[in-house]
Length: 144
Image (cartoon, rainbow, N blue to C red; front, side, top):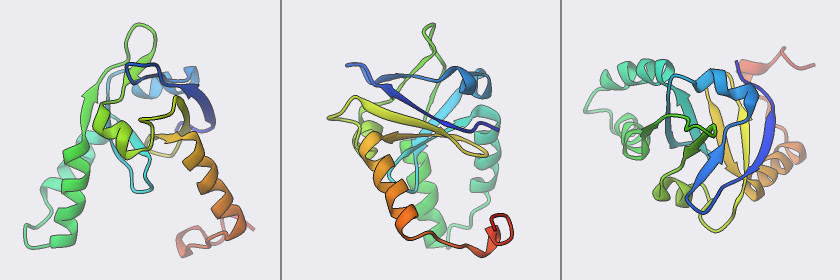
């Protein structure tokens, strides 16, 4: 599982370097899509295939679930690391994540994915959590 955070800059073509510790995680390819917190999710191809199988089974009459399917699929972009260990983030995804007018990005690890954040949104998210830490039941007992 990838963990840690790394700050990089996007170039003028929307490419960002994937930090060395994260490269083996996505070396076979990656799907970039919208994340739920106004960031981008980068899934290894195998993980994305598992997500696709689950999404294919969402009932058509389950409107909220179909909205999530639409949200993830419409933004999805399959790509590979280039020779300089970069991925290109398409313009609509850069706009969604607030990366269109800035070159500063933070790439962070999560249990099943990488996340790409605009630097300002990342620090807003961290500050919000520190000021008002959530305590979800699923994590109770993990942190004292």
